[in-house]
Length: 248
Image (cartoon, rainbow, N blue to C red; front, side, top):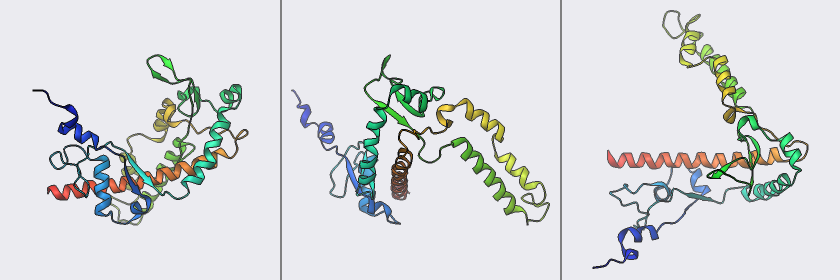
């Protein structure tokens, strides 16, 4: 007896795959709503949720795609319209100007401009597009981390300065000992590690002369994306917490 694969439970489930959309406003709520949590589950939940039943509020079973769309993000259309034309302007710059000004071979072309340097299929280099990579949060990650380490030491020292000597948490040299013991490497060792991994720690490179506006607009849009990602992560935390409460 033959079976029509299109009518099998697996096929029916995969037919119901869709990209889940949530509102930016819903993500801003201090506590995620039941509807938002259901959408998070539909977007990211595994097939093992509820004994293979990953369903929305209407009871429709979904096999998640691992994709979530966020609608109505403020300023996104304007920033996108401002930034995208600059991508064409950058790609249209003379190759000699691109290679001399904003390429970073020592970082494996993972910072700045990259064209024809990445392999996407076997040994074939991808020449169909160009890419521009940057860290949206800091221009110099190594310096930012060193500054943060110094600030944490200072805060830790001040928080212990009034504690009685001999308590093990304050007084004279105790706080400095605690801080040093908490750090897996000292600053010099960290800098050595950073310089050995330039793909992660190389400074951002910007085409200041050819496209002076790019840095500000790219950072503003990228930071908006990061902030939305944090809101989504918070909602995912709420979803996981709700699942744990259901289990226990």
